[in-house]
Image 1 (cartoon, rainbow over the protein chains, first blue to last red):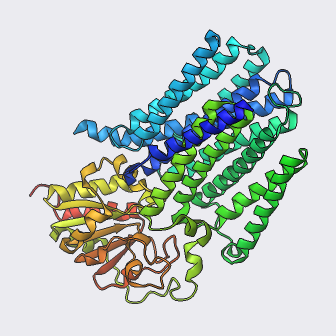
Image 2 (cartoon, rainbow over the protein chains, first blue to last red):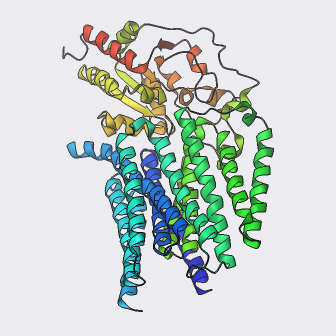
Image 3 (cartoon, rainbow over the protein chains, first blue to last red):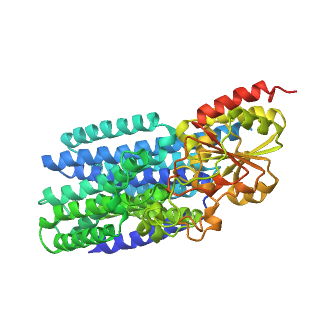
Length: 97
Length: 476
């Protein structure tokens, strides 16, 4: 039961941290922020990895794990790159100034 | 605690710290790009941490490496290609697509553990595992199906079916929610028999809820679904017992909720009315139906150019139409020539112009429009009476005076740009069709408004030619 109670504390503190992190966001950044947070939510790569590693020789789990890893990485890689593309447009001008 | 464990915890802690700093930095213009990279590094670190932990412990078998390799190559390269290829205008639907896939990933992990785990280490099908699996499947399925519907609607592949706008949809959605709840309890108490019912029920619920939501509200829904995918990730963290996953998921879930709230405020809508109010146009059946325009003044590009030439202060109001026509570069050329003739040009950015907050900022930034020329609604609104010409490019609902004057209008209460206060208003539009909300725009009938019909890019191109002929921009 110790993992569970620990995990609940972690869940609580993580949620509180998330609530505090974003205060005022200029409208300009709504889309990039959403996209960036979206990329971070692809952290389920860790779940997929853990699933594959602990599957042993259980073939269905390995296959589903690999598909899951693919979906999660699609989210992570695509999410970060797309966010960078958006933000690059803002920073390009400010350098020129 | 051996050295591997200490290292693993250190890596995890650093990863969480960097992720938190990343989210924080993303909410400020100056630090946003670095923050995004920081978050990406944190993610890489977290992955290394997991691999490292198992290498130091039970080891990773060859077959596991092979499957990891396959998943990484396929998912990673598809993500890279999509991110590089997708046009800037399609950003909202791209975010929705990525988000849905994140939800799908959590869903698959939970399904695999529930169906095939058998005697897996650490998982003896206790009540905590069952609840985590049920939550992960439930939220993951809603995220996936909801995001895909949101993407399809934004792409124009799907429109809201008429029965979805009637009251019947509430009963259908409630029925689906009850079905999901029953299946949820079945998964927790019984065996795995409720699992597929839960999967089907929650997938349909995600579709049912998203399908009835109108285009203007879509960004809010995507943001909310983004928050859900964080919740799904946290639940998956309980399933595979990863504390890092729980923290990160909870953080994204909570931050996404706040962002959703911020967006709602920007549109003067409550989250409840977004989720349950349905399509904006649905309630406008009485009162004002679109298409009954009278007293429309249309004018040629030439007249528009003449008026612009005589103006001193010009305000551009960009909207979705500009994004669709990809006319931002042509617009930039037009404004450059106006500026060269000493005409003061600014851009009025409505918080929800386009299909996503910040959409117009991104679009205009792509065309090299200086950041200082973009003015937010609160700042530009008092300046309209002193403005000679307003050029509305593919925007509609955000300049509808009904939102201020007509309390029976579904738009009533939404903050809008007061363009009608300016001396002359030109509206560039493809036709007389209604905006995304399906509501008639009173602005078009005002005496100081002239319509210039045509695709934004073509009109701006013609305008550029006309202005050149008038000698605007050629330093004279």
